[in-house]
Image (cartoon, rainbow, N blue to C red; front, side, top):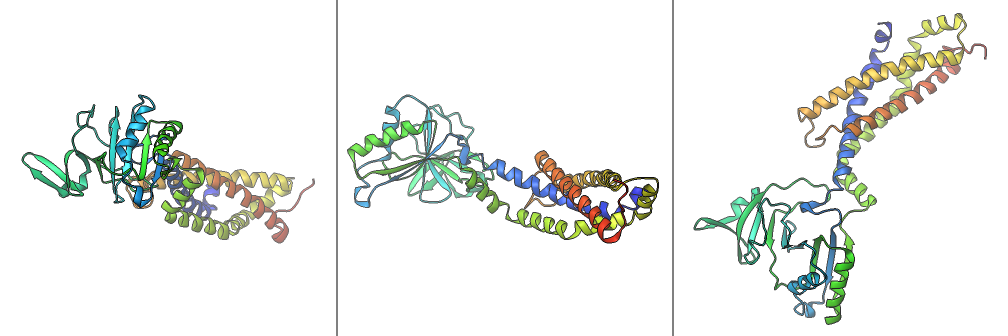
Length: 345
């Protein structure tokens, strides 16, 4: 009870630190994990292919020729996306594959039909003809066969519509391919390059590098990072002073232990054990507060998840700060104030 009475201020302090550090580390770790998930249902082995042709040569090769070359390399099933001239739509081509964002069992059922899969929010952009709904893009009507709800993605915007690929369009553009190896795609493009030497291309993994993932997190979690920086600054300015005051409040207990033969190291270990009890109890309360805040969506625009790894990171952070500052503050009190005096070594 004495420990509790003399530690109320430091308990309140660490509850605040634990609450916000749990929220911040949980959000950062969750955001980093999300960067490993590619958009539009693509797998980690997907490729991004950029194909260039001079304006005068763009009509020499079509997307259909590219697909035929891909299929000639083997009978592997694959999914192909091609960016449309809007940031929120994609063409798609399926070779013995289903469209990841759709629940429709494709099985080639719509192979020769211009069809569309739309975000639920795009329903108002459809037109009705008889009992069917259509989505118009570039003066072409696509039958709407399914609706989907986009998932939030930190790396790039999820597309709002997917329409079946027009094979007669020119080959130039940006593609995502899932299901084929870089070597297979390279062989197909090299064959086309033999026909049209003006064709240039780049093949890159769609999975981002660690640096790119960190950059995405920094961009996506800017507010959380600011909160974490403020929390760390708050800790840096306050912790040693608060800990020194806590030691000072226990002056009588320290002298009593010294009088019965305790040495400085004994006093320091005793203070550390007491301090860690206070810190651990405060952290537990702070973690519960963080969990409740997430549960009631108090920060739903910034923090949406309470992550166990964030909890452990926050605990390690608080224990490191607590242990180091207690040691520093005890030495400070010994040297400057004489609260803790060295016993026999």
